[in-house]
Amino acid sequence: MTKVFVEKSKYNADVKLFEVDSKYDADLLVYVESNKYNAKKDGHWYYEDNKYDADIKIFWEKSKYNADVKIFFVKSKYDAGWRTSCKWTGRL
Image (cartoon, rainbow, N blue to C red; front, side):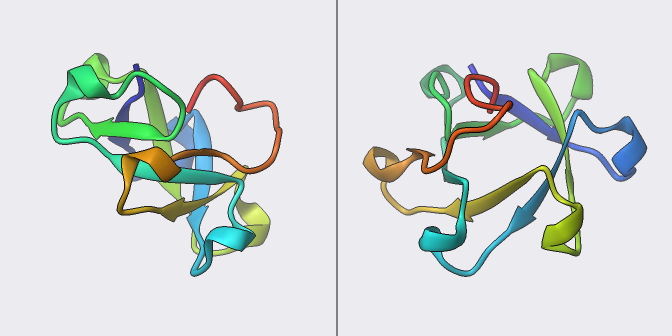
């Protein structure tokens, strides 16, 4: 499952992300699930309110150059997944 918690400090986050404007610039295409039990694969996220219930803690960077992964949000769950391979594959 990919249950995500958004950190306010990048120093407390596991990974730093940057949201891009085009899916062609993204490393990972993300679909936000409304039910945590549907967030079972990479790119299928459920936002947790409690960081202790989350699988991963993220921080939104303001610059793509400081980010570990570039993200694009999709409207269809069938489009979600990795576009490129990186060390975060299997964890987001």
